[in-house]
Length: 113
Image (cartoon, rainbow, N blue to C red; front, side):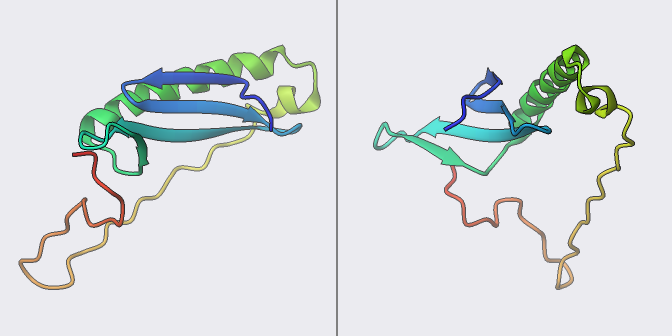
């Protein structure tokens, strides 16, 4: 198993940088301790404070990535930041029925409380 190149942590969130010869890939993980069993678990559910913390972690990871590639004397390192980035498009699903609300908690994931 490869070792991560770098890891950033904040309040249960972890962003990890991995290398695969050509590019750097990042993974995001959120862990919490189950109050009933005291076991550590993972979740896909993020609350607004998690999003804010994740934003900070991603900014740090992006800064590190830029510095890391600038240190590489390779075509990948020199061209990594010359590529245009595509903007992310987010689609909001409208309610299927009038007066129906969409819950952000409609996921099969276990909530950490």
